[in-house]
Image 1: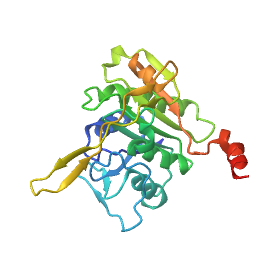
Image 2: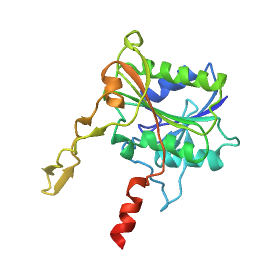
Image 3: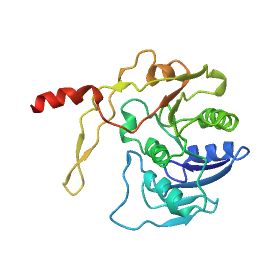
Image 4: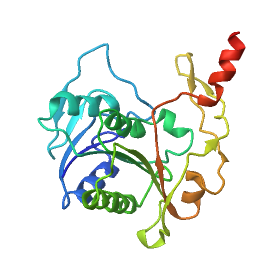
Length: 246
């Protein structure tokens, strides 16, 4: 099995290396990741300049672009094979609920899915995570399941893992995305030169976090698996919008 690894924290991120080491005994691994942290890059492609690819001392390839660039470039030209799976992570921080819209981690997996490759995005439940090996174990479990029983179609799985030792994980749950409260206000600051600048505020707290959601599963010690789709059409409003236009 041949797996393409990427992330949005950069090719030097500890979560990426932990995942790479955990998967090495089970598959042929190629890493193509951003040259720097690109958290929040979402599904952006770099179209205004050419991209460069370099190789680090550990064999990882790194790209001066976004997570989506990395997967797109790898699959459509850099590699001389099509990966059997794309895995993005392990992200240092959660990607639950509304986070998935902004996440570069999820975007890398989504790009694999759009290229008809089974893909997984994997994230820890909080920033400053200490137990990346717990998430790596969950990914190894899923990879082995794919090896034993290939999934019938391309799939994009969003995996969120509690930042606890493996012994404290209660199991896995298939979930839906929850929702957050609206984000906190931007933070205004003044530079030493008197220029006004703004920091984007923190994400809102969980709002729709009841049983069945990714928030609820992780909060209660379970690994959350959410199948994602790319179609953003709100089908329930199609007829409503037609009527409004009339």
